[in-house]
Amino acid sequence: MKKLFLLFVFLVASSVTHGHHYWLLDDFVQQHPLQKKLMDNFSEQIRVDAIPLTVNQTSPVRIAIIYPSRQVSDYWRRSVIAFEARLDALNVKYSLKVYDTKLHGSNNQQQKILQKILLSEPDFLILTIGANTDIELLEKVLKNKKTKVIIQNVTNPRIKWKDYQPLLYVGFDHVTGTKLLADYFLQHFRPCKFAINDYYPGYISEVRSASFVSIMERQPNFELISHVHTKATQGDAYRKTLALVKKNPDIKFIYAASTDIALGTSKALHALQRRDILVNGWGGGESELKAIEKGELAVTVMRMNDDNGVAMAEAVKLVLEGKKETIPVVYSGDFVLVSAKTKKQEQGLLIKRSFRYSN
Image 1 (spheres, rainbow, N blue to C red):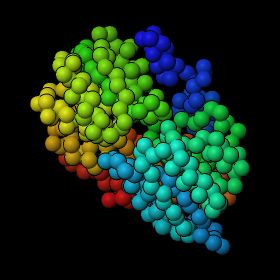
Image 2 (cartoon, helix red, strand yellow; image 1 turned 60 degrees about the vertical axis):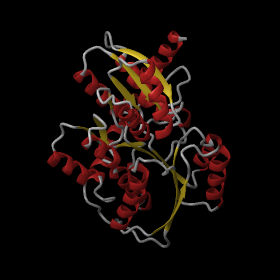
Image 3 (spheres, helix red, strand yellow; image 1 turned 90 degrees about the vertical axis):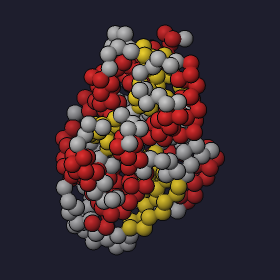
């Protein structure tokens, strides 16, 4: 069983073959070299101030968003705020309908929402791919090409969709963020025992946790003694951390795969009076930054959060201007490592940059 798991990890971390569904971002760019220039130009467009739309709209563009905002992480809420603010700055006329779903909403619930949206034939559909996404229905939308699709929080193009990719994958590359966190732990710890509190099985688990395992297993004498999937909630992470530490009191750090998991893990360590065991955040939202200030988290990778909303707005603008060919397949925003040693002034500048519209 262990050999099979390690084989799976190797395939996830270093290949796009053998049934793996997604391109790793570096592999995708290597295989599609023209994308590099498109990505660089588009990233520069995201960083600068808005340049208003250059064409007249005969009617507002119709946009529908499905997103799982019911989490401690403020990523999704800020994303929508930044998206609307940038559209306004671009002088784009639009109508927006937002459909809020639970992180663990049923297949039936999400399918009904998607079907309801598609009946209205919006110009743009923005959503993420989760364990309960109706992939077959989404593929029909992509193949039809009438509604343009933007996929959030995914920066790994789906291999099967090579002939009908969405307008844009937008987010912050999970593998890149994971590498930054792995480097932090390797720099701050000698060989030791560690654990992983993971997301539930699926895309996020693959790109955040399997890639972390792949890095750490190449380091001599770093021993992974527990790797558990959670429901990606604080409560489940709390309960599983209590059991973990009771069984393995000599671990030195716990890698957490999301904000809610990190905060639940931290609360359990506090209850156990085990602040000597370090845990990371993932994403660098407001709740994580406050936890770092209080000493509840050791480190996080901070996304320049609002850039993802800006990227979506700029993609809409380019379509309206007839410049769809200038949009890259993937936009991956910037990360910065933030820890307790990050100076307050520096953190303040990062917050200003990250939340430039949503704050």
